[in-house]
Image (cartoon, rainbow, N blue to C red):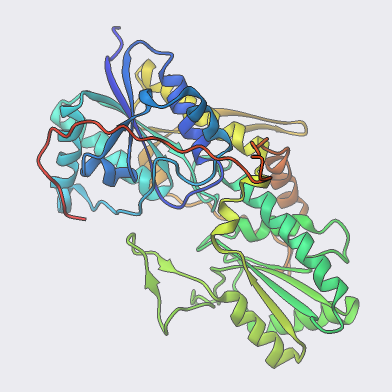
Amino acid sequence: MAKLKGNCIVAQSGGPTTVINSSLCGVAQEARKHACITGVYAALNGILGVLREEIFDLGKEKPSTIAGLRRTPAAAAGSCRYKLRTLEDNREDYERILQVFEAHDIRYFFYAGGNDSMDTADKLSQLAAEGGYELRVMGVPKTIDNDLACTDHCPGFGSVAKFIATMSMEAGRDTEALYTTDTCTVLETMGRNAGWIAAAGGCAQRDPEDAPHLVYVPEVPFDMNQFVTDVKTVLKKYKRCFITASEGIQDKDGNYIAEIGGGFAKDSFGHQQLGGVAETLREIVENKVGVKCRSNKLGTCQRNAMHFASKTDGDEAYRVGATAVKEAVKGTTGKMVTLVRTSNKPYKCTTGLADLMDVANGERKIPRDWMNKEGNHITKKMRDYITPLMAGEVKIAVGKDGLPVFARFKKSFLKKKCSTWDKA
C-alpha cells in the first residue's frame, strides 16, 4: 500500500507540563525521518492556531532548537483551552479546520493534550472520514492530573509527582524545625477530580515522622470532623502535622471544599476553577484544633518545574510523540498512543493504542485500596505505582548566569490561504 504523502501538523492543548515539549520533539524529529511527510508544521496555541490559520514551519527551526525542547518546560508552540462543541452544534469549526488542512496539504495531525483534546481529535477524524478527506489523526497523551483512561499513566505526571513529593519533604522539614510556632502546614496540589498529584506527595513519607502525615484526595469523601480528629491524633504523636491535599477534595455529597467567589468560576471547558483548599483547611485547623497553621499553594510552579523533571517522564513523553508518527505513517488513525507497564520491578513500559473516543469519554481515578482504610494516606500499592515514574532527572542546560537555558521558536509562519476566522 502506498504511503499517504503530505504535510503534518502538531498542536499542544491544555495546561502546560515539564515534558509536553518532549512529545513535540518526538513528533518533529520522527516526522523528518519519513519521506511521505513533506513538511512539519506546528499550530500556534493549539487548535486555535489551526482555526486562525496561524501555522509555523518547524522545518525552518534550528535542529538545536528542536533538540532543546527536551529540556524546556511549558508548551513551546503555545497552548489553549478552546472547547469545540459537538459536530451537530458547531460543524462549521470542524469544517474550517479541514479547510485549513486542505489548503496546506496537511495529511497528518498530532494533538497533544488531555480528555477534551482527544475528543476534538476524535470528532475531526470522524468528519474527515465522512467527507472523504484522507487524514491521519493521532492523540498524544498529556496531563499532570494522570486521569486519562486507557493508559497506565500520563506523560507529565511523573515529573509533577517528583516535584510534589520533594516539596512535601522540604516544607515538611521546615515545619519540623519550627513546630513550636508553626505547628501545622497544608500543601495544596492541583487535581480537580482525581487525586494522583496529592497522592504523590505521600511518597515523601519514608518514616512515620516524615511529612506528609496526612494526605487527602477527591476520591475519598472529606469529612471535617474526621479531619479535625486526624490532625489532633498526629499532633499528639509528633507535636506537628503536615498535610498534603488536592484542590478538588469533596464532601460526601460531592461539594468541593474550596469554592471561589461564593460559587464556582469555570474555565472554557466548563470545568470548575478550584483553589483555596489550603486556606480552607488552615482555617479549620486554627479554629477547630487551636494551633497555628501555614498554607502553601504551589500553583503553576508544580507543572513547569523543569529543574527537577523526571527522566523517565521525559523519555516516555518523547516516545509517545515519536510513536504517534510511526503509527500514522503505517496507516493508523483515530487512536491515542498509550503507555503500557509490563513490569514494575524492574520497571518496564511499552506503548499501545486506544480509540480516541474511549479516552475522551473516560476518566481514571485512584482505586480505593490505593488509599488507606482511614482515607488519609497512601498505601504500598500507590507507592509502588508512582515511584518508578519519578526516577532520574532530565539534564538541563545552564547559562553563565547559573540559570536554565530554554529553547524558543523563531516561528516562520506560513502564508495564509483561507478567509479570516475571528470567532475567538
